[in-house]
Length: 184
Image (tube, rainbow, N blue to C red):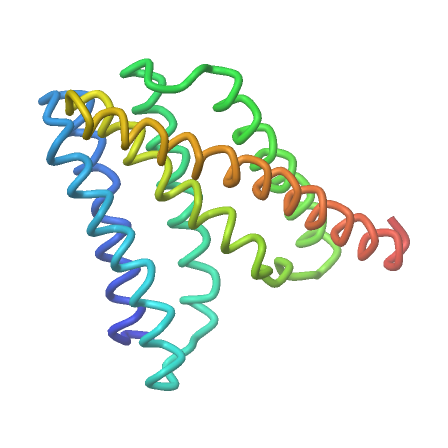
């Protein structure tokens, strides 16, 4: 359980309150972006190291996507607070996560664990985790940097939102299929 990949995931989780403090309390958006960059790096390395060092664990399998979801929700709150993204974007993402949370609770009630994260699900999270700091960077920069961050951020956001919703539908269908096969 106490492996370097799991410690990296735990470190990433500790960045969540730091990020919120930087955005909501101190208004230090540059450091908030740095915090997200470190979180992105630890997200990448925890999985790579777990596979390379044969330290994959059930804890890591559950904790990593949970921390990803918490980061996405936390960053969305910050984005709403700074008015960087429209509220309908947040509503789409939160609705997807709440829906899947309800389905997951139903699956657990029938004795099933969570579904395996798909490659597209990882790609959706990757896109969102890149989009959100770039969009936040538009608030802290000017000139060509702000323009480039805006274009790149919304490009990642568009793909991320589309993939996030698409994979959400896929996960929901798989969950309902499992529930149906168990007599739901």
